[in-house]
Image 1 (cartoon, one colour):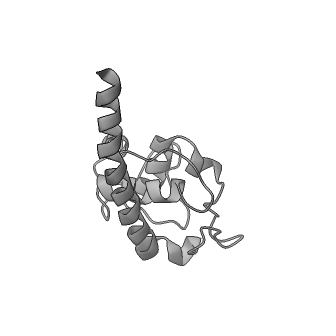
Image 2 (tube, one colour):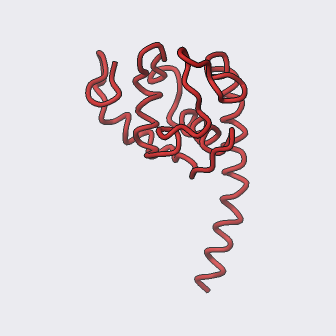
Length: 128
């Protein structure tokens, strides 16, 4: 019975994950590709490559923080994107450009957002 329930859950979740990645691709093209390039290879010395990047492939919470607070020339998306949108675009990036990492859940983004100050600049690692 447990196997049947697990299989059912996976079958139901797979189309949802595919939709999230598709939504993430649209967001990537709108908000990220101009700098990081459509290929995810970035521009050397200006915009980092996302393909094979340790931050992209690492802890989803830290990656979420990067989008929420920005860094250097990268803007903050804290007020521009919902938790779902950030999770979608990060899931797309983590599964594209030769990357193969687990999707980012909106709950992870929400938890990271909750650690940030409500107003003012970011604090802590990856803050400006």
